[in-house]
Length: 174
Image (cartoon, rainbow, N blue to C red; front, side, top):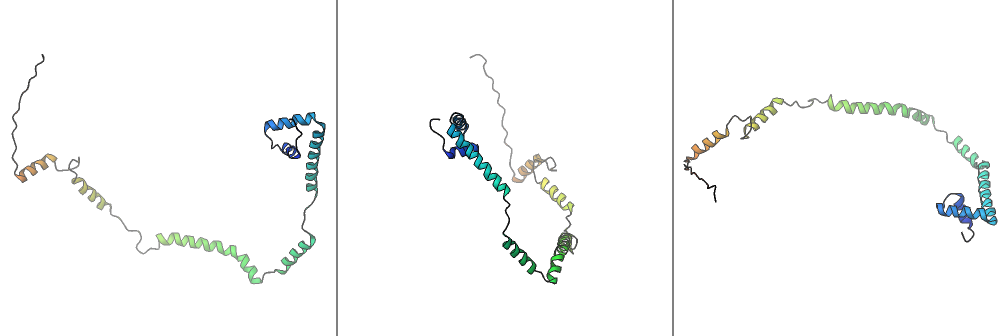
């Protein structure tokens, strides 16, 4: 380091805020330069003195402020009805909340005059069977697709066209 560090750099060095290269440079300078070492030690001593003073000093409210607070506490006496309400508030709130929750839960399921509608499973089975019979190539279909073809041919009075078989032989030698 060519020039002497400033007091801000010393503070950053003390608090570990410098980069490793700057930290090493300031350390090397403090080791070589007696006036900078003295300034560094003065900064360290000042910080320790401030911490010790802050720890030693007891921070309390001024006595006039404390007296005013206690006076207002003494004057703010609740009425007997207010004391009773404050005492019963948690004792009443919890059971009332539990009763409302139980009524909401049991009221919707057990207090209903009709109850939940019953669903007959046989309806769904019959509907499923009817749907399966309409699928032409299903394994469970009772009607054979060939029968459907024959029925369509008979219904439309179509005649079959005979195609004569033709034989073809190819020469193996070119």
